[in-house]
View 1 (cartoon, one colour):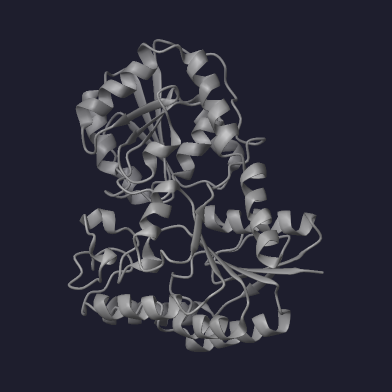
View 2 (cartoon, rainbow, N blue to C red):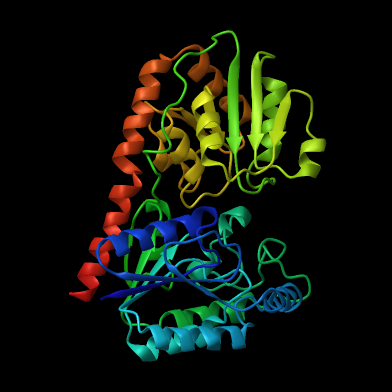
Length: 398
């Protein structure tokens, strides 16, 4: 029986963890044995789960990262134990997802993988694998990663370093170790990210893009009728901050008429207490049913994030038949077209306000909702997208 081993920071938790879980389920449906190695935050899984390290190891790794810019260079014992598990399982394919997050020592792992000869698929969910520090260089409008990182302008962003800037060393280490594997296939979650990969030191490896998948049998239009005197604007994120556009909703509240109601999902308690009048906030929810109802009930979904390598919440909204407004940056414009929403210039609040009002007050909502649903089924349905991973596995083994 062929064996698949995936490595990710979470197991069946959060967007990346659910992706790994569903890929594992697909592999098992084809007669494979599925294993998922993870560090923290796990929900029950159909795959065999392997815990990497401990809470204390993760915290010590975090301290080294915060003080010395050593992200990905601690957790040696945890990584050595993982390597022993890999040897025991003897997988036919190793599939990496997010290997950053204070739990792995990438020089140890990649040195082993290079010597093992095992085929490796690596799904990139952000830009960390080819930068000297950050996960989203677009925040700092930085392109040093194309030629060599140094004097990092994003040390205060994840993974934050407060004492040292070792971006040049980190860049060179990644370039060395990540290029040691000959049988490496890189999968980006959008065309935009795939283009960034092609311009990086990883560009000579086989690389392609596969959109993240949405369960289009679960994320479905739920409400049909609308109160055309009141409009519902929705925003959803796992973590809200300035980069995700929290301040944009404050500005939209001032620019939209009073009959527009804004709801934000995923805020923490402190953020909820500080919300201005006219914006309602709720905590992060793991209830898919609740999310589906919110997406479906909304007249428009707004994703004002500055950097998205895919934009899963936008795809989920489309699957629920809800048109979207996004900025013209990173992968956001790929997800929608003129029939399913609006793309507006970055930080242009008047343009975003106009786009929201046009969708709610001018466009034929029934036709637009049908177009959103069709686009989601065509581009983001998980049953089709994850099959591409299966075909990729088959081609690698063959």
